[in-house]
Figure 1 (spheres, rainbow, N blue to C red):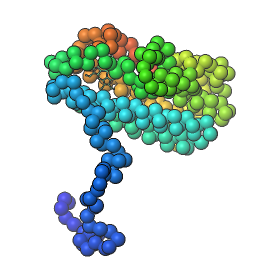
Figure 2 (figure 1 turned 60 degrees about the vertical axis):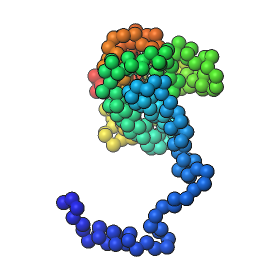
Figure 3 (figure 1 turned 30 degrees about the horizontal axis):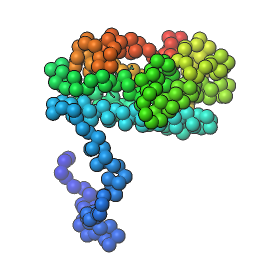
Figure 4 (figure 1 turned 30 degrees about the vertical axis):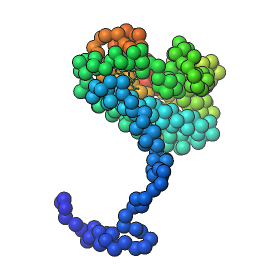
Amino acid sequence: MRGQGTGHHTEAMTSRRKPSPRSPSAPRVEFEDTTPYDAYVRSSTLASLQRTLTDEPGEYMFLVCSQIMELYFNLIAYEWRTAQRFLREDDLDEALVALRRANDHFTALNASWISFRWMTPTDFNAFRDALGEASGFQSFLYRHLEFLLGFKDPALLRPHKNVAGDHYDDLVAAFEAPSLYDDVLAYLSRKGYPVPEDVLGRDMATTYEAHDGVEDVWVALYGATGHVDPLRQLGEALTDAAQQFSDWRYWHLMAVRRAMGAKGGTGGSAGLAWLERSLQRQAFPELWSARTRI
Ligand code: HEM
């Protein structure tokens, strides 16, 4: 029952009232220049980045939530690259830990869309013009995620080509490198699964295309493994990742539909119709098609 202390609880509270010299009762409060917290987390830098273009109350949410999503894109890409590194070292257990972490981050990322539910076209119109041609379409961190998932459209590199800094070079490197799925298939091949040679040796700088031979591999793997088998768990962790990515796209589509209907986008696309097309594309395609045959 709430508010009712147990003996254990009371004892703990008593010991807190009599601090020992080794456990001071209050945290340190005097600092010079900066707090160690700010030196580490950089909250003042983060706060300084939240500069809106208008005084519309809705724009602050739009900016901050966009920044939160960008931070999560980077974090998820980091986890997927960590998983790739462990797969290359044949350490499936550690790769699975990173993949599961990424899926939890994705759940948190997708929850950010809840902040957009209130936004009507009137609210969005109030600051939309101030955005000029700025569009999430130009997000290089989102493109990193897509490349890791195996979606590689060279046209999507172009917006970053003349941009200052290392973003373009980093993006091109990610574009040309194996995707997370390529590393998974190479791992399965080393474990004796008959992944076709033309898939293993494919041009990595192209979108991954579904292959019947890979579908056969997943059908065989799911048939031969139980729930707790790490290879089955690898398949499920990837399926979760693909589903969470589709969820992000779906939430985005619904936020767009709510805030601007079928108007054209600030990035110059047809808006909803364009986004609906990309929602059709599924990451790790054979993990989905194999389910019909399992
Ligand atoms: C009400 C809020 C939003 C609206 C109305 C909106 C609108 C759009 C539209 C119309 C597009 C298509 C490209 C264009 O012509 O601009 C687009 C693309 C995109 N937006 Fe948003 N957006 C919103 C929020 C966000 C947020 C918070 C993010 C997070 C960073 C985001 C990230 C993206 C990305 C990554 C794309 C490219 C998608 C792809 O290439 O498949 N958007 N957005």
